[in-house]
Image 1 (tube, one colour):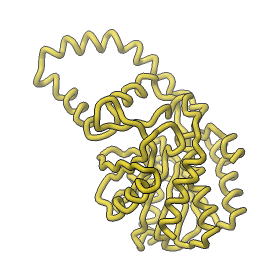
Image 2 (cartoon, helix red, strand yellow):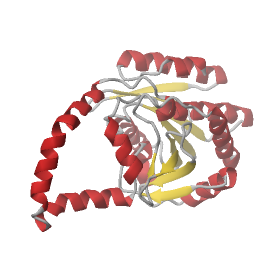
Image 3 (tube, rainbow, N blue to C red):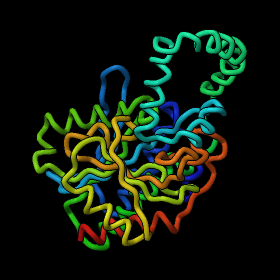
Image 4 (cartoon, rainbow, N blue to C red):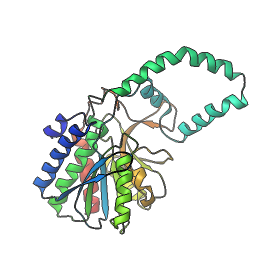
Length: 295
């Protein structure tokens, strides 16, 4: 655990290789055979997976970390949240200038007065976030905890996948999906679950799906039984690595908070120096729930 938490920034190749070495060391010590996939394309992605031929379950966590987002984005999501209404608000803003010409003057004034502030705020994305406990060190630790339980229970139908460049647009998971589809690794139609942001200050376990899923209710019921509550939503937005595996009905699990506008959800503190909370007890509980269900 200490070595994992020491490497907080994982944005350049040196930091990522150092982190992967720690992951391989821990997994090898548990008895796993690991493999690195160096995948090309627009940019090089290095994913790490445990050996499992034709898995029934695949758990995914991204190991790269993000930059510091402009301060106002966090407050925007606190108000709006991520759900259908985010898309609707974007559509309304886009079309408003066509249907409400009187807004054009207001928009021009607002744009002029705020452009300087917003422009400066975007300089923050040049700097790696120094704290990444929830996004997504918590996902990595969850998979390592699952790895320990797998060996204790002698389960051989679960694959663990640590993917690169989620923060760059899910590039690692998209590349891995294409590789696994081409080499026949997905022929069993495995149940795929990504784990992202489960150790921070969010209070509500949230399951996100991007398409139809035959096993969404199964895991929603499981988590609700274990934590006393669970919310499940479907969205068009590519929020995490499950999106790359959406044709398999892949799910993502996070812990979130409710937005001020009802119906939306957001994750507190990520992509900012406030991402410094890690609830290890929750992570252990979630890992045990998932593995016990599979067993």
